[in-house]
Length: 233
Image 1: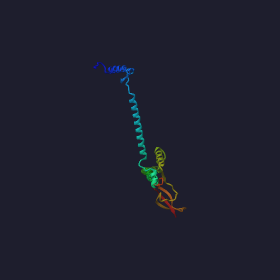
Image 2: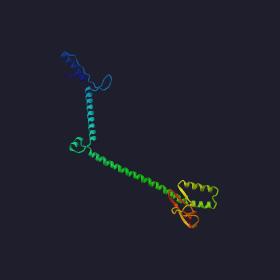
Image 3: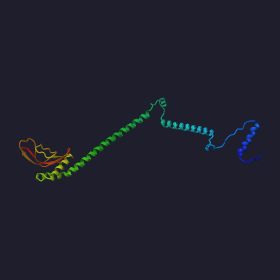
Image 4: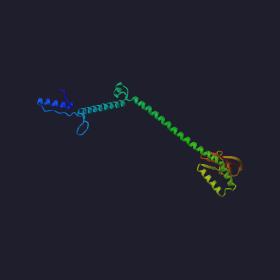
């Protein structure tokens, strides 16, 4: 029979006629996808349950895969201990050998690093000492001029005398030691004998006069003192 209007209304009327003919109450189902009251979209309960179950199953599968992968990474390719014992091989022997080899390599590298650090520190100390010695050697002629001026009475007083004193004190802080003692036993390592004279009441060679002062820094002699030596008669 031809019908006019909405198909949904026609279906609803047809179902009502069939229901009245059968003597049962009509059942009306609202299949609209948008709720007319709230205006929000409707989701079938079956779809939600199915999607929720699917997501839970997927999460369970992913967790299972991640756990399996973690166990595989942790286990690696090592042979189980039971099989090793069954085959008569000591458990973990390969791992112990590898660990011992790595430990020996680490100890060797540590020893090499310690030796390298000591060598670098020693070289640095030697380089610093040589730099100080180079500066001190360059200033020895200046100190000779200061001594000569002092012997001639030019540095008895005044600003130049104060400057000379400050220079000598500053050089002492760098380990500079003057060699100018008299009446001591002659030492060829720090004295340079220019003149020998017979002396009285002496039993060994003795420094009687210093012609030019010598200097040393620590155990290193920068310049030997030029002296006159008195020898036993």
